[in-house]
Image 1 (cartoon, one colour):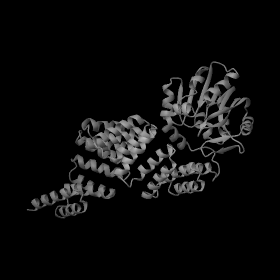
Image 2 (tube, rainbow, N blue to C red):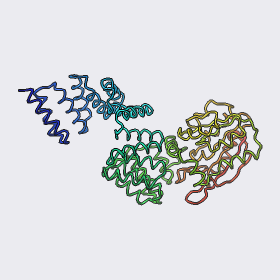
Image 3 (cartoon, rainbow, N blue to C red):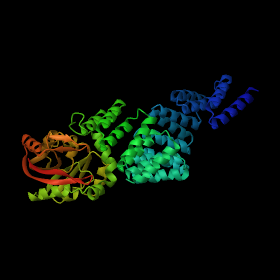
Image 4 (cartoon, rainbow, N blue to C red):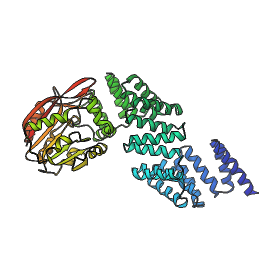
Length: 497
């Protein structure tokens, strides 16, 4: 009689659970446990409800009790792994999913959840493989397609990410996460109107989703629709007032609209809610509300160019009229460089200077903060070595290594150039050349502009050269690029150690 009653209570509880009626289901599972404290299904499913209610610790405790009763149930190990990941215990989550897969190797959900744990651990290639295993078992697994899109986005493979998100949406159209993933990929591919529409679809499905509103604001801002972008950020913050990134992006939009005091307040709100102090310091400095930092944060520059890598060359040359590599090449040739130089391209990016420098270099090395930019540079086949790190770390300890150091449009991200000049001087052989460009400043030695780029005065550069042990061989004024249709004045310098 008791077993029959337990089976009946469990059946009723499961039906309520499947209908989403969590509290009455929870009450029935507890009633089962009062009659049989070691009932696996009741412990396990009560733990699942705890996780659905946001109680990761309770879920871990209950599901662990169920596994102590019966450790051979793959779905319990899988659900424990999900709860452990909720609790930030990614290593243990991974172990749980792998235990589930030992018990049931064809368990698509465990493969996908294993990928989530690997992603949290930063093991992106392994995570991709795990999602692929899930899809081999269950090709119409929308969540695994969407998770692949997120990983591919993290890796800068935006076209692949777009394809994976659309695979998910072809299976499940009303899937907010996949619409967000699609929008993020389109944003990074600069297909901005479609990105905005994709974020709209995500918001329609999840109207209180601050992340989707903020992402939409970023695309609208990139389109120059500042009022609409501001509205999106305001909606994000209405739903999540402590969303530091939305406060920061909102500050950028207000700055672009010339609303300086409001921009300052937005940046200060971002800082109050936990944004990176370095990032906020240079944002405030760019609107004249703080001391000018010595350089932009490496993480900011890396993130900027990781997103920029796929369309960097086209945007610079076709949209911004970028000619700096050709100007530096002409300046170098004017003083007749040797043809068998050891050359380093500092901040080489996608390698736009590579074709010029290779012509008179027996060895050509490049360094940049952005791995995705370096991947593009590697495709050119011009560089002997490419290193992903900051300039000072790269140059440290490499005394008298090169004959020529070039930095094209790099010092716009560094204000105080004294440490760079010193490091380059040490890294050059006697008689070595140092050729670089800067945006032209007026008053202070260097200033951070609202564009988040530094400008330097020629007097500062000449003084720094003399103090470091360089001789100025030549200088040339140039137009670095176009900004809002207007040319940006710059200077090219050629120094000799």
